[in-house]
Length: 158
Image (cartoon, rainbow, N blue to C red; front, side, top):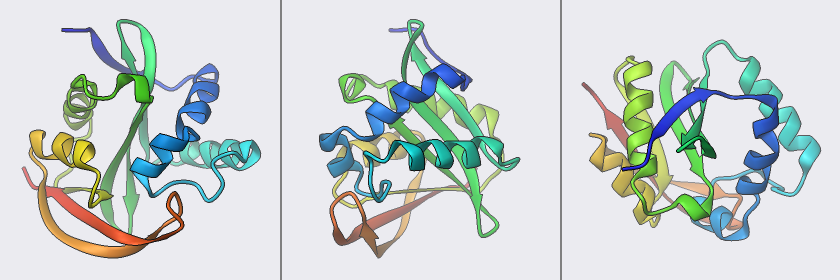
């Protein structure tokens, strides 16, 4: 198994995150993305806001020392949610599942919530493998697809 780790985000990680988060196939799969994934100034402003928030725990995901993506927890309306993004070349290798397990050791608040496009089988599988259970669905506008889609809401209680 590869050596998967979480580490603090560094300024030099942001170029990789930007490229990963604007990959057209990844945007389509993730669905809930930036309004314009190619707007670097908005990306930079968003990351500055995220990294400056005290309620956010954001980490870079590395595989054998190579930056593969990022993972974070954050507060929304009094609830804690998680999010993650891997470069497409890292998909399907168990990396997201392992990284989420590491984040859940670091962020111990429960319950914790996650959301995924209802047809994002990969992300839904990652969440289920780490103990998240579906608690409902919502119809929401997915900027990455330019339309409303079903979003699955999942929660980890213990």
